[in-house]
Amino acid sequence: MASDLSRIIDQVGKDKGIDRKILIEALEQALLAAARKKYGTKQEIEAHFSEESGEIELFQFKTVVKEVKNPPAEISLKEAKELDSEVQVGDSLGTKIDVSEFGRIAAQTAKQVIIQRVKDAERENIYDDFKDRKGEVISGTVQRFERGSIIVNLGRAEEVIPQQELIPKETYKPGDRIRAYVLDVRKTPKGPQIILSRSNPNFLIKLFEMEVPEISEGIVKIVSAAREPSSRAKIAVYSRDSDVDPVGACVGMRGSRVQAVVQELRGEKIDIIPWSEDAASFVCNALAPAEISKVIINPETKSMEVIVEDDQLSLAIGRRGQNVRLAAKLTDWKIDIRSESTAERPMPSLDEIAAHGMDTVERVPGVGEKTAQLLNQAGFLTVADLSQATPEQLTKIEGIGAKKAEKLIEAARAHLDQSEEKKG
Image (cartoon, rainbow, N blue to C red; front, side):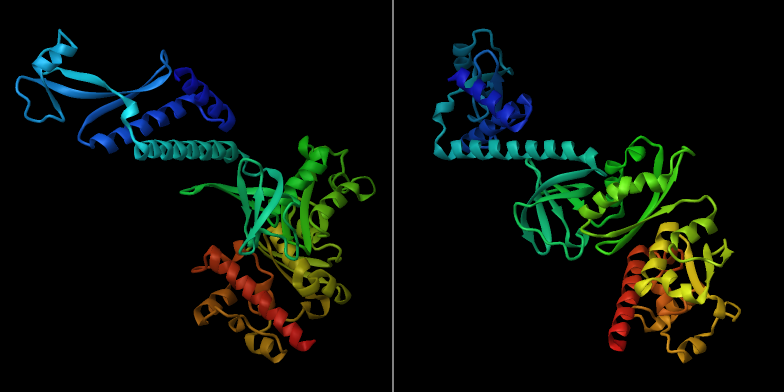
């Protein structure tokens, strides 16, 4: 029997990846809980695993007294002498409890405690395994769907890709293989929660690191990335070796490397931009394929007025402002694009903006009079201006936090989309 218990402990430890000491402690606590259920919580009882006999032993301790007044906690000197001839009054005498006395309820309690401890140990092991994997790309199997999120099975653990971290319009079915970026690993009462993402810009960066040896070797570096998942992305790269073209390295022979990333992202178009230490050059590169005529920089507000030829204006702005929006995210500069024919004109007033049929920022849901004034002072006059902003730019404005910044930008884009639909 003893050897059987030791063998079971070793087998469970091996199968579940749990330390032998944790299992022994669980067994001790389980039998202790069962004993207290039978004898009461006021009894002084201890449980110990005997390596020699290979069994859990329970001992009930009582204080040796001349006259017993509290039987559950005391033993008479005469009775104690029969167990130990050298015992004295005041000593604590331990007597072994016959564990076979426990009934079905006690055994069930022991079983429940052991199961819970095994679960706790498994959860702790899973957390320890994944806490250092934040920032990695991992592969798993789609297990099921919950409220728009995907539950991914990685074998020992379940991960979740929240709906907002999925690439729009992507479809999966149970059993499909899926790759994602480990965004966060959290401890929760139900166990470790591993949050994955396919829409995060860092997923794009990691995919390039996996496809481009020059990046993993440290020769080429991705400085920044900006994405509108499922549609378009931009990455800025530079090379530490003058003989290595960073853009060419990321594109690969006949576009093989970039196409591998595009395929993983289900057709998302990717612009690879050469990074430049000169901010104006960097912004011009980021606005490609548009050709830039002139750049006026305002370092204090970290904004640029970019002048382009009239026939380059729509190309620079992009469909629904996407090109300039991604360029602003990539460079972390506020970019205002104007055509050469309007460049000489002074900055329009709000009345002039309204007269030309453009909506001011006050038309965006969530923008009150005070917020509108603050946005105008920062150079955001129209809904289009606000739609091209980055959260980082808006959070520099008094009273606008990160969450509010994201909501304002989303609301501005939604307003523009609705306006275009009405025109169409």
